[in-house]
Amino acid sequence: MFDFQKLEVYKKAKSFHVDCKNLILTKKLDTYVKDQLGRASFSVALNIAEGSGKFSKADRKNYFTTARASVFECVAVLDILCDQSTISKDEFDPLTSSADELSRILYAMIKNLS
Image (tube, rainbow, N blue to C red; front, side):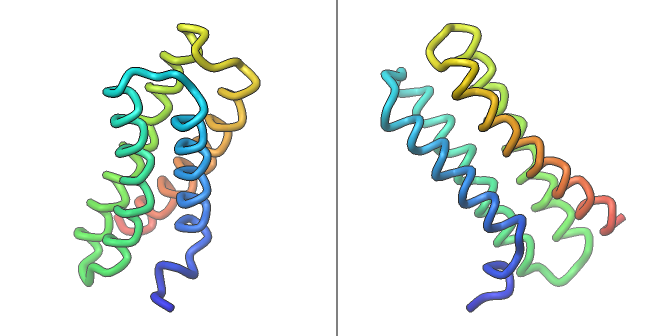
């Protein structure tokens, strides 16, 4: 097992991606929206994994910052989908709650590398 697989933030990022993927598979979304949300949510977990493999604090910080930015990107997509009534508030709230938790954890990780 790789060290990043033991990280709680990585496990939460995987779960967030699965939840976004389930939304993508169950909703009628434009292709570009599916692609954007799928890529952005996948990027969170991938950047956490890649960043954990870097040796310098600056490199790790950069990847964790990118992972956090991808969380923000997902929330923007979800926010627009909710505004358009493509997803309900009941679908929106748990996803953004998970995103908020991820963002807070990543923020703390980034600050600890400063």
